[in-house]
Amino acid sequence: MHRLDARGKALAVLAYASVVATLPVGEPAPFLVLAAWPVGLLAAARVPPRVLLGALVAASPFVLLAAVFLPFSHAGGRLLWSGPWGVEVTSAGVRAAVAVVARSSLCLAATLALVATTRFGDLVAALERLGLPAVLGLTLGFVHRFLFVCLDLVRRVLCARAARSPRLGPGAALRSAGGMVASLFVRSYERSERVHAAMMARGFTGRVRPMARPRWRTADLGFLAFTAALLAAACVLEGRA
Image (cartoon, one colour):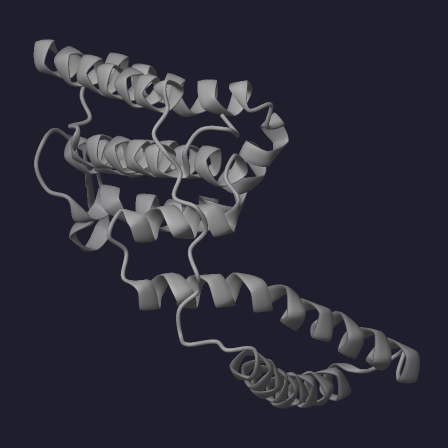
């Protein structure tokens, strides 16, 4: 998995997400087939299960927020519960909520399999070769690089505050947080100016020089063929259901 071409993995994840997002939620068999794909990839890549569980937990507030309101906002189907002020829960709403949870979990697992087995720089380069605008790819690369610089600045500021003011009340802590945000903004802006000046001095022209273009191998084509066969099997099972 780690040695596969990033373009093939990106194409496979995009195709997988498209099928998951458009496949109707009916019988569980198609979704069980689809769930086997990211789980098998994560197992083959030896990604610990706690990483997948952590990602699902991190995304659960957004998914659950949508899933909670869907049963009350979808009309149609069998009436399951009727409350005051005309609030109703229907089978169509419950089915929509289950669909949101299932689809988001599968797409998140597939994305995690892509990110866990591909370096970020290789992934951005692969997306650019697949048609991503160069400006967007350059922006993503800079965000990924300098995010760690900003995190280092945050750690330094927090360490300095803990050394100077170990015990702060709620009001003082709020004022201190406001000052920290302003200080981080100024420091990050100054750091970006110094980095930009250093890059221009080294001949940066607004585009990162591409490395050697990788070639498609038999393993990459086999991986794409396997993914296409699995997605086709899921669609066939849904059609029979």
